[in-house]
Structure formats: C-alpha cells, structure tokens
Amino acid sequence: LVLRQFHADGVRAPNKTRTLVRHQNVYSLNSQSRPTHCKDSSVKKISKAQVQEYVAKNKLLMGNLQKPMLMLTPDNEMIKSFFRKERLSTSTFFPKAVRFAENAKQLKKIGVLAPLPKEVMYCSEMAMHMVIYNRLPGTDLRVLNEGGDDTGIRGLPRYLAELHTRGVMFRGIHLGNVLYLGKEVHQSYALVDISGMSIKKRQLRLWERMRNLINLLGVDDDKDIFDELGVNWFLSRYCRAAVLDSGQINYLQKRLTRKLKRKIEIDQGYPRAMKG
Image 1: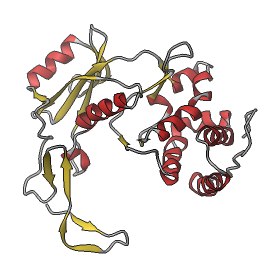
Image 2 (image 1 turned 60 degrees about the vertical axis):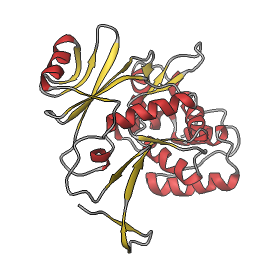
Image 3 (image 1 turned 90 degrees about the vertical axis):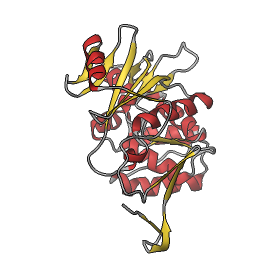
C-alpha cells in the first residue's frame, strides 16, 4: 500500500510518500502489510479468554457479550473498548485507544479535566483495544437538559472558548461527551470520549474555531436543544468569551450561516437575554 502526498490543489506530489511519525517510532504508510496495532510498549497484550474474564467480572453498560463496548468495574473504573475498522483509516496506524490515552495526558498538562487511563490493552484475536480509566463525577449536558436543568449548557459557550484558547480541537464534541460537575467545584466541566481530538501548542485559529462550532451545532441529536436555547444566543456568548473582534465575528456569522443552513445573527454586544 502506497499513499502519495498531494498538494493543496489536488495534484499529486512527485516521488513522495507520506510518513507518519509518533514519538521515537516511525510508521510508514508504504508498508507491504497492514499493521494490526500500534507498536507501543505501554500497550499490554491480552487473549480473548482474558477479555471474556473482564466481561464476566464487570457490569456491561454498552454492547453485548461478544462485543463489549463499555463496562463498569466494582472499583468504579470504566473499561472502554475500541474495535478495529475493516477499512483502512488512521485508526489502523494510530489506534483510538492509544490516542485516547495520549490525549488524556496532554489534557492534564493544560489543565483540562478528562479521564486518566490506568491501562491500555490489545487483543489480536478480537482485533480490539481496551482502556481502563477512572470514572469521572458529573452528568453529561444532554442528560441534564432532558431533566430540565440547563445550567451546564448555559456555561458551555465560555467553556468551549477556553478549550479553543488552550488549543483543544475536539472534533467529536457533542452534548453527550461534555460533563457538568457543578458550580461548587474547582473545575465545572470535563470531557469524555476523547480519542477524536487534537491538541495544539497554540490557540485555535478562527477557521478552526468555526469548524469546531459546526461540529457541535450540527449534531442531529442536539439540534432541538440548541434551537430551544438559541443558536444565536450561544454564538454571541461564545464570541464574547473568546474576545473576538467585529471582523472575526462577521467571518463566523457569514460562514456559519452557509454551513449550518440557517440565518446566523451574532450580537456583538453582551447578550443579556437569549435570542434565537
């Protein structure tokens, strides 16, 4: 398999292949065989029988006995499974479980609350990784809203702006993987299901912020919630928290109107009341 490098205009770059680099190990995309998992000494190899032992000992929260997706241990720890996709993808070379663990370390460094993996395991017989991590307190924003509590989601614009300032691009963001811990704690929010993100050493650029806002506001399961809250109200609060100037706000307004297929009108003053 050889994946050629392409220029931005779609023209193939001559005689160049793309090489993926991770720490001290180099994973080339022009290998003759498809790797089954990331060559990382921190990943523990386990058998199918051992996986079945985990299923028998713990409470199954998602999935089934043949394909356990999420389990809760008696010690109140979570075990999340990641199954390899049949088609070739970035997960072939950088498994989601490994990305999950690495993202957790990076988030801790920049002060963002997220699960801390205790162990990463790989079962070649089932083509799956498992991650054991601490269970975080709090309730996800989707569940809170369904219960009539919108306190957490009202604070989300400011929290999202903080994430973007710290360089967090959470592509998989939705209201189900943002936890609200309450006002009385030091950190009111936490992130879960963190494999689908990148963490940069700078704050996000404006176009990256726009893409992440589209990621969040375009989730089908959450559209009714944002409609009730007020999309324009949410974006106005976000822009205020992110300290964006009028030119940046106009950029977002124009492109979000097109991307979200709805009229976006961002209040450039402080939005004191919800506006749809």
